[in-house]
Image 1 (cartoon, rainbow, N blue to C red):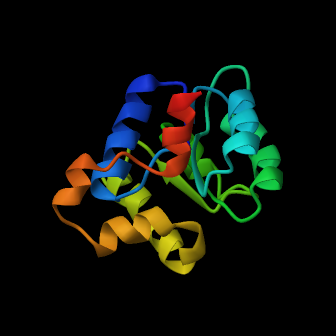
Image 2: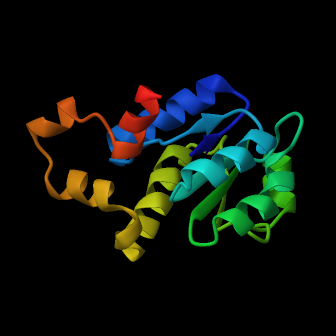
Image 3: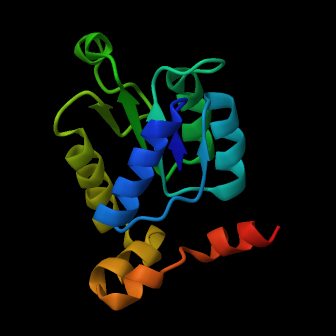
Length: 152
């Protein structure tokens, strides 16, 4: 699940994670309040969470997300080098990445891949896509939950 108030950042993250990482995005939203509601409903295996958002920040939403998703990966991201330098990984987050870093995209995929490899039961779609690369990927439509959500 992607949570960022900047739609262009979410688009970049989605393309990166789907094309480079072989992951499927089950939900997206622009603030912490909506992230909590979506997390309860879709139970994502991972959340990429922006630190600074209007209404409810990622930091404010972090505790509630962790309670609802105890086994999921939560990656907190910031575009502020000042915030990155002042703060360690906040309690409840599994990783804390700086979006302005030149290695940010590589770091996001690396954190997710590492988590997926440690918890294969939560990532069956990712495992299938990575284990069986080939022409099928071009027509791949995503996990069953994505198809169900299109019908409703």
